[in-house]
Amino acid sequence: MNFDIKTEKLREDAYLIALAGEVDLYTAPEFKQQLLELVGQGGKSIVVDFSDTTFIDSTTLGVLVGGVKRLRPNGGQLSLVCSDRNITKIFEITGLDKVFPIYATREEAVEQLDSRDPAQA
Image (cartoon, rainbow, N blue to C red):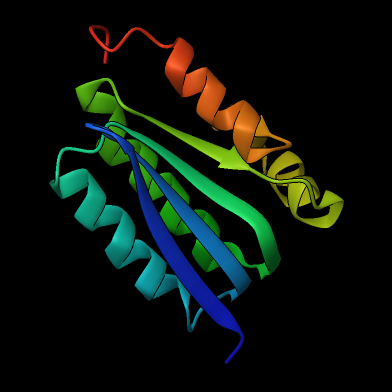
């Protein structure tokens, strides 16, 4: 199976989840578990990096929407890193590009975290 997930703590309440390969019906549950764990550990700002992802499906979109629903009541945010035009297009077609800030690079996404006032989070 072509899937890998790595998690990195960026600061006290911010994490990065880097996904590689295909995130689909079979692999999305692992992604969901990781995302919920981070929220449970007090994560408020989570960046999901799709840079090395080759495919996502509706299950993946459901995990992302579920994650943002858990983060928002606590003032949290879920941001995406995506440079693959085919994957970005999925967010545009579904209108989810209006729900998630999408950045072309990991650096841009992390920069926006740093520019947020931690007191607001």
